[in-house]
Image 1 (cartoon, helix red, strand yellow):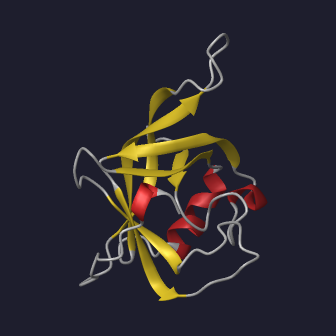
Image 2 (tube, one colour; image 1 turned 60 degrees about the vertical axis):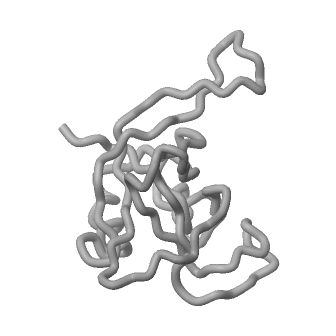
Length: 146
């Protein structure tokens, strides 16, 4: 059985253009993928009222399995079955992005743990890896957060 969870790292996050909460998805928490890198894609622009004020790129791409010291940060969502076709369509699954199942670390705050402790639960989730043909991955997003 495939997971119904999705790791997002760009415009599908809360407060962005395609916020998944507007589409009946359920936010599960902040998460990250080890060994992955985020890249700026699309044209460069700035928009002061955007949740990520001063971001430089229209979109973001993810590359998996790039090295153990890299980390890509994002959000984990529970996705209703009715949403997958729409997601595959907007991500142009198989051409611009490819949907893959990966281990994602979900940040948790267990009872009794100090607030600033970092405790993670590893879950399998879908994510979209950027795969556009002949794309030059030279605009790495430093710090792994978009």
